[in-house]
Length: 341
Image (cartoon, rainbow, N blue to C red; front, side, top):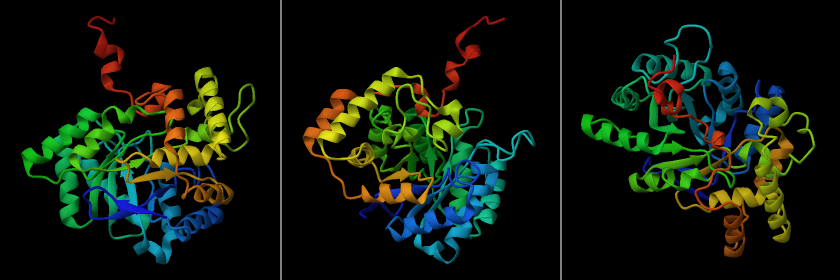
């Protein structure tokens, strides 16, 4: 396993990081198996584990805590805040305000059974809160020792720049990282997010490098999603009727076959090729999936393969904008129409 600097945070992270979202209520409900997956990932050289308070309404953080147990110091532990952990309750228990940040960090520390978080991430933008407030609150957490670094997830380019400016204006600590969606099917980050990350020295953690399972080849035309897959468990987030995506995956599968690779390994290797990326988050639901993913850690792609992929999905292209993971509020009806009665 290769390791790279996580931006200017001073930490080094493995080529693959472990995303744990599907361990627990949102995927694998066998808690012992979840613990084995996390520990097997560490044994395989992975040293970054990424979770979030909202995954399983806090359950995922507790699963990670149990699995790490005596191995806490071996990992760069990452979690996130923003979403309501208990939807429908106090409306102030969400978002990016100082009020919620100070409560959310203590809740996560308790669930994760640790004194500090290595990387604390803002899960999504919050246009209702001044970005200076968020930046200053997270800077205070660094100074208090509750977190070592902080970053953002799925932020648009303009907010990444504004966060840097806000930190400069207020004397606060600027973000260390960004976590964008990035895969062969979702290349929009190449237009602005990744160049901005390089400009400001941000570490980057790519989420969904297999596009929710699409780039494993498991989803096929006129065939129901396999039982237990993301498309089966979360059909609202499954793009099964997108014929452009189906055709694209079929073509990419042919490229992988010609190269003597699985589509999964080719897709992960493609994501790790970008020089702006610090780590690519893999999200296995089973031990078998983890074993297969780890086997692709040494795969590299020739220029001919990379060019063939570019010919199918040109640089900067996102086939379905929903895969970006966040809709700007400016697209809402009441933001676009002066009279919408």
